[in-house]
Image (cartoon, rainbow, N blue to C red):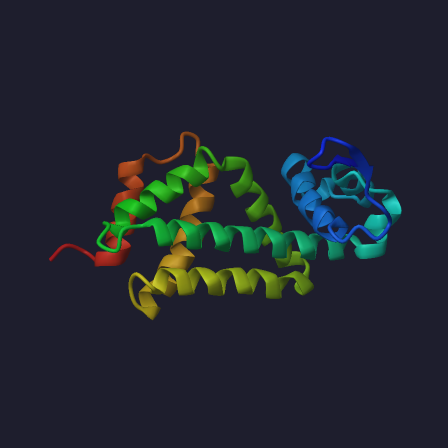
Length: 193
């Protein structure tokens, strides 16, 4: 695959391209986004990554290897994005309102991203070797939510967030922002006195 260097000249990436494995992993996510889990093939990933077919099978011998790296990559991206979101969130922010905004972003602007993550996450139900990557994702969510609440509420919010996000992504029409905020508020604060 050709690239352009800063001087504007084209150069070819050689067989020892150190970024190739990472490009293949990213391409696997792109293929799942476009075609779903069933559309993930070495050939499709090679085309999306702009690498020879042999490169995908060299780095990832089986489709489960490709799924595993895609799940790890998607989980790492998701956790990184959540960490950036949390760092940007004012310490005194209304957490229920902020979470409602976050969910709205995932079901609207980031909808394709959300679908890919759930496709990969659900794939772990049928592929036990993918479960550690899914569990790591869950653990990161629990830790994230616990920083704004407590460990038990963090665990509750992590499971609730995942389930609510999936339901909202599937709903037609999706729930409104006030409905989502009310659900998070109840989960965080409990029933009214």
